[in-house]
Length: 194
Image (tube, rainbow, N blue to C red):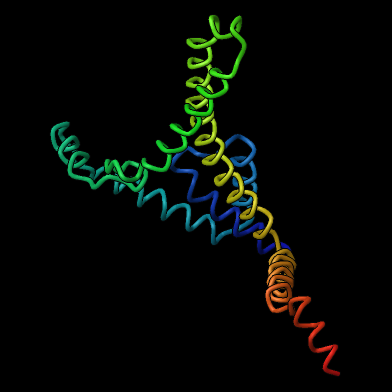
């Protein structure tokens, strides 16, 4: 396979990101060097510039009230549901932690009990709120980072995709082997019969 082809694909993607101003200095210089040698990409860039000018010239200004009405009419996203049932599991866990904290405080010595109740409740509340915020942020960043990493690794060459496919198939076969494996009692019963 020609190793220049993935570079050309990446540079064509940069060509589409350029009008939006999403390229850093290094990407802009790589794109400029590529445009000096590739007539197809130069022609495509001219078409994109013309299209962007046409879109910019034909844009109709939208009033603020229209924008607000559209945003209000949009359905709630999955994570924005307002149904109390969606929060029952989280509330049950929070209640369980609160009961556990109360039991720990209740079994503490007399000297500790006088100083702890308000501080312990405050600490548990801060722990719950900060861990929920950190967990949500980490989950979003992790999935986005994994997506970018997989796109970068798998997009470099066909061999990377083949290696990834072999790894996935191997893990599937290993899982099937463990699922279909006979239990020790069955293997002893068949050994005794023979």
